[in-house]
Each structure stands twice: as C-alpha cells, then as structure tokens.
Amino acid sequence: MLLTGKHSFVNGKVDNIQPFNWDQPNFPKLMQANGYQTAMIGKIHLDGIPQGFDYSMVLPGQGQYYNPDFLIDGKRVRKEGYCTEIITEETLDWLKNKRDPDKPFCVLYHQKAPHRNWLPAPEYVNLYDDKTFDLPETFFDDYADRGRAAKEQEMEINRDMMWGHDLKLIVDPNGDSTNFVPDLKRMNEEQRANWMAAYESENQTLLANMPEGEELAKWKFNRYLKDYLRTIKSVDDGVGELLDYLEESGLAENTIVIYTSDQGFYLGEHGWFDKRYMYEESFRTPLLIRYPKEIKAGTVIDKLVQNIDFAPTLLDYAGISAPEEMQGESFRKLVAGKTDTWRDAVYYTYYEYPAVHMVKRHYGIATNRYKLIHFYYDIDEWEMYDLKTDPHELKNIYNDPAYTEVREKLHKRLEELRKQYGDSDALNDKSLKQFLDHQAAK
Image (tube, rainbow, N blue to C red; front, side, top):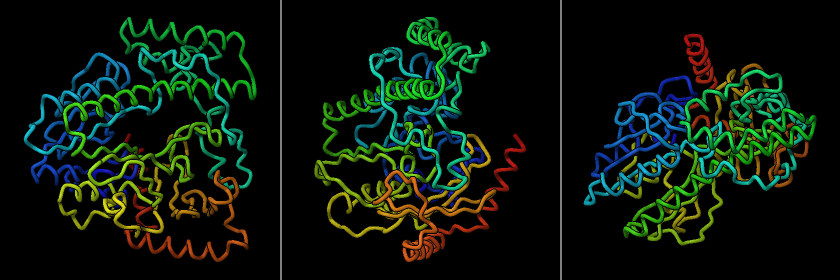
C-alpha cells in the first residue's frame, strides 16, 4: 500500500504468502522516471527484486538482527554487526558517497526493528534493568463485552509468547531447548558472550523460582516491553544520525522527512503483543513529517490519513502526476494548512487467517468517533465502538438501540467505500482460496 497507493485487494498482496507483483506502478518508479535518484535500504518483506530503485539493499524476508544477510541489487551478502546500525550506516553511506549530488533523491530507510523477536543491540542489552514497568490498565481484559474474534486469538503475552523466540530463554521450564538457540548461534563469540552476561542470570533465577498467575504475567510483560524499548533505542539513534547529517550537509531545508510505520502495535493492551486487529492500538500508525518550507513546526493534524495516501502525496511534492489507479489522496495541502477538507472515514481489511496469531479475517470503517467491523470466514459477527465514550474499545455497541441510527449510517458508508475502492465479498472469497492454496503448496 505504501509503495503502490492502492489497497491490498487491488495491488494483489493481501498476506505474507502471496507473491507481490513488482511490475505494477509504484511511486519510486515514477520518481526515477522523472529524474530522481532512488534507493531502498533495509526491510521490505516482499519477494522479488525491488523495482524502482537505482540502488537496493534489502533484508530477505524479515531478516536477522545479528549479522544479517542482505540482497544487494539481488546478490546475497552477509554483513557483520547489528541490523539496525548496519541499515543506518548504509543509508548514510548512500547519501554521502553513492548518490549524484546534482540530482534530487528519494531514499527509503526501512528498519527491521522493532519487528518480533526484539533483539536489542549489544550496547543496550542492559537498558532498563533497573526499572519495572506497570501493566497497561487493560492487560487482564477478559473480552466479555465483545464477540469471538477478540477471545479466540493467539497473541496474548501471558498465554502465547514463546519461551525462546519471544522471552529469550535457552531452555524452557521443562528443561527442553527452545527456538532461541538459532539466534544465539548466529551471533559471533563476542556478541554471544555479551548476550549471555545480560540475560542468563535472570533466566536461571526465573527457572529456579518460577512465579505463577499474575506474577508470571508481569515478568513476561516486563521482559517483552524492556526488549521492545531496548530494540527501538537503536532506531531512535539512527533517525537522529540521519537528521543530523541532513542538517550538517545543508539538505534539511529542502528535504521532506517522513517517519512512519505500516501499522501500530500492542504493548500489552488487552494482554496482547503484535498487531493485525482493527482495534485502535494496531489500527493507528505513527506519522511525523518535517518539511520546513511548507509545514509549520508543531502542526498537529487530526484527519484520517492512511497508507494509500503516501504515494500520491510524495508524487505531489515532486511535481509528478499520480496514476489514476492510485487510490490514495495527497495530503500535501492538508499538512500545509491550506485546506481542511478531507475524507470522513477510512477503510480497513485484514486477510491472514487461519495463520499465525489467529486473528480472524475482518474489514470495516473508522470515522473520527465510531468504528464498524465485520469479522467473517468461520464466524459472522459485527462490532461497533464509540471511541468518545469507550476509547479502549471494551464494549461492543452494535446491538445497542441507542446507536441504531449511527449503525445504519456506518453500514451505508461502509458499502459506499467498498464500492469506491473496488472491494467485495467475491474478492474476499478469491483471496481466501488463493491463501489456502498457497498454504497447501508450502
């Protein structure tokens, strides 16, 4: 969606199994065709060689945190070091030494972090050792006032996290080796020694005095959150280095910097880790933009921008017309304060079920205040939330008589957006068949 400006059911990539068609238009291709020098460095998690880039150095799949492999213009190369730092260093090297200073440029600086399984850099393995974080107020959510979709997932910190992959134990409470062992083996001797010194004492203390119930849940949450925060510290460092370079080189004034993500994330809210749901914590994404020429510092916009809007916006800034097939809208005038007219609702789809984390297939719309979601495939359940009175989305009001009129309006708007973007139940059925066929082939 970020690359093509099209919803996933239009660009063809609706899950992690189906291949991505690089032959379709994307915004880097159009920039490249209009004189821009383009590069992609880091994670993309799409099969095939990236198209639209004069230079690409991407992780195969999700990639590894320690001593990662990269596909450099299609050739696999292993680089010694920590992934986040390598991606930052390579991006700075491209900016300083590989681009043509006489051409405008577009570089996509894509960090793997903080994707699961959150391995921090060697210098940060002990960060926050002196802290104990409080549980979010919804951590022990019992999902009582919602349907099956919230109850039947497999993404609860206390129940579903892996002793090895997520919680970094080398042996589990039964004394069996865990799936964290391959991560340790990938580290070099110095990295491994540093890791063991930071983690193994606490691991052994836990195994010798295994807590139960809420105390175990608190331990798992703190191990998870500390690793998450340790891991994103290197992202913060890298962003700072890039911004410093833009300032020092005189590029900052005429360079648009966008800091964003493809989705939000659960940090223990509702007891969850990961993402996928249309509920607020994973539905809302970070978005910060710096462009001194047009955007006043401190500007806050509360409009409903979404991933399909990035491609047409960037093309707008570059003076390039977006193809008609792009479904997003440029928010250039919006962030510049030149208009207040914008969409009243955004459309969301999620397809990857049955699969890891078992979040059921769903689609829906969100307005500034309300959300309407349809969970389907092996269930047929509707949920609706009033974010003003229920910001944590704990009570499904779909059948509340007081919201009958609102519900009818949301249903009408939902169908309008599905028609506008070209989505349908038939497309859902087609994507499901393709998904199951690919799973069977694997």
